[in-house]
Image (cartoon, one colour):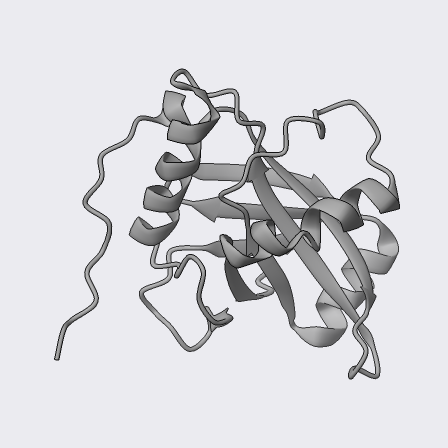
Length: 166
């Protein structure tokens, strides 16, 4: 029997490149209410290129207790996961050891997050260089990336409990 080991690959913050957080909400086929989603990804613009950036992201996620390429984890039931979500004043703030990012959440996203008490987080190791800050991302572009088989297979998936300061 073997014991799972954390990542021992070293990386620098510069290798991760620009990290982005984007969200949306929608109804899953087997659900009776909307689900709030967050997608964290890199632009692939790290100092050593997108291939090294992908491995750096994998290492960073594994060090945060997230399982890349595995089943959906539940952060509420796994105290070793170092991913925290704070929803306050119309914003979602995601914090990991290598990332702190804010998402200015629309009312429908906030309602879904509050109603469910959790958010489905997807942490991509695949870069998405086309989705740059300040440029709109269409639903079709988001769907194409977030549902791409390779992106889904090489990402970490985690249910994040919604926390607030109140």
